[in-house]
Amino acid sequence: MPEIEKYKNAKVTWAQEEPKNQGFFYFVEPRLRNIMKHLKRDSDISYAGRVSSASTATGFGKIHEQELKNLLQEAMKI
Image (cartoon, rainbow, N blue to C red; front, side):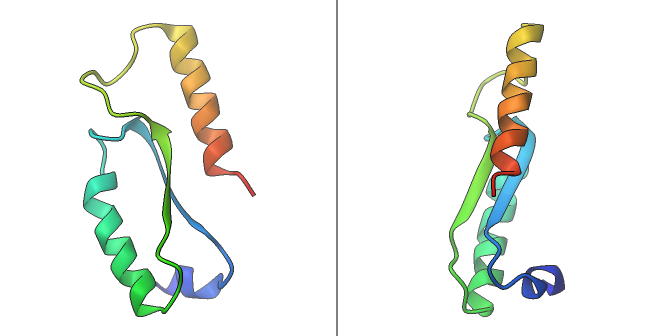
């Protein structure tokens, strides 16, 4: 919470390499929303990562690299 308090105008984005349904997003999201509510800030939490999937990766190196590139661009978007 102290880090979020330091940056009053920052938007919160959760970034993970795993698909949305296989990482910690669904565990962390409600906790981040509670922190934002406590700080009286916009509770919009963005997600940067792979879409939900039954497998952890596409199985194709080039597609995996493109997905990772997209994830990083989305996570660092200003």
